[in-house]
Image (tube, rainbow, N blue to C red; front, side, top):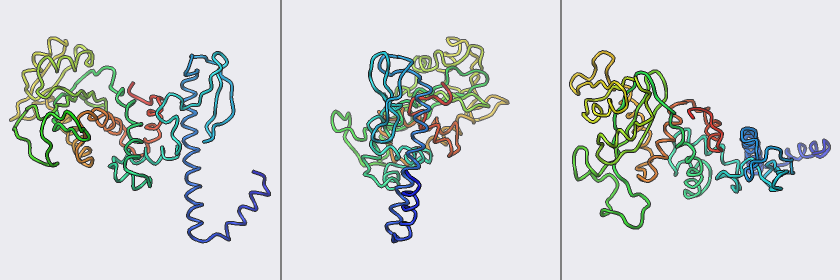
Length: 321
């Protein structure tokens, strides 16, 4: 903008009333967030460094999109693309919402609370959230080593949002389970954590954990020679020789036997369930996505980690890959 036009714009601000100034402030905020999105998207282009269509590594600059994103043209295949091509955000119109939505997810807000903050419909907030989560599932640690702890957390099976082929009659949320203990009304979430780190390996098991399902979940995830502390389940003792690890158990009465305990993983499960509570029940089909979301922010509890969260959703890994 020319300096004379900019000065004229500044002079007109004094003529605006309160509601008009609030609109201007809102628009300026949107522009600021859009600039942040552009910067993060550019980091994705730098990390990718190639045409998403053919893999060509020498693209031209090819103008701008209507939303202000840089456009590129591949010299090899002549196709055009932007830094967000290939992501779920490619055709999103209100890209400034990515920043505020990421901040809401960093705080673990519900869909309803997120919709109120963004000023959108609940369905819009939900679909925007679903665009962020798929890549986070890949953030399992490559391998855990050292002193480890493993235990299961149980979540009630939920068919929330499912209209057909529900295997049981529907009931009101909060209805007690029909069975006690470990049963097929729940799914087991096997959680393995390395002490002294934030590396957490999470796998959803069948309803009743068995030696076979636990062995499949831990296969290749634990370095041989590691020490795995458990709560006394016989299934883990059988898995130890198969994985080449030393399994040590502590009884439910003693809780702690020197260095052998599962208090670290139990503390993790407590935070996990407290964090999941605000969602008032997550559909079992989406449980893996929400657990990956929890794992991301459990590793970096700072609210300032949302820029990394946006980069990860763009496909630029920031850790734990």
